[in-house]
Length: 91
Image 1 (cartoon, rainbow, N blue to C red):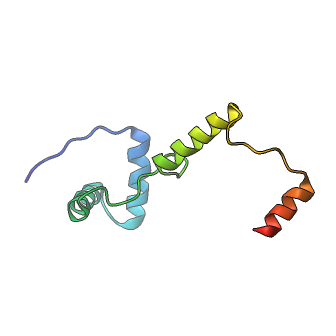
Image 2 (image 1 turned 135 degrees about the vertical axis):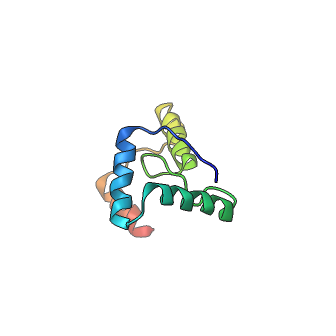
Image 3 (image 1 turned 90 degrees about the horizontal axis):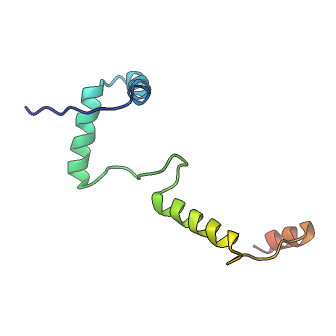
């Protein structure tokens, strides 16, 4: 048997333990399950997301669009409330 040692901030460890306790799984078993799933999936076994719940690519696109908008690129004029409602009705 091999051993792995990791460092993690106390809050993350505590929060993860609360979730695992509710599931009836200890930390060691959860990490073993995770590592086995990496092998089975030949990669991370879930979608990686940022704190905002977005993929890194999605977040990058939003940041790029925001920067372009600040420069006046790829933006349209503001619509009146009536124009906005008509636009939404046409979708």
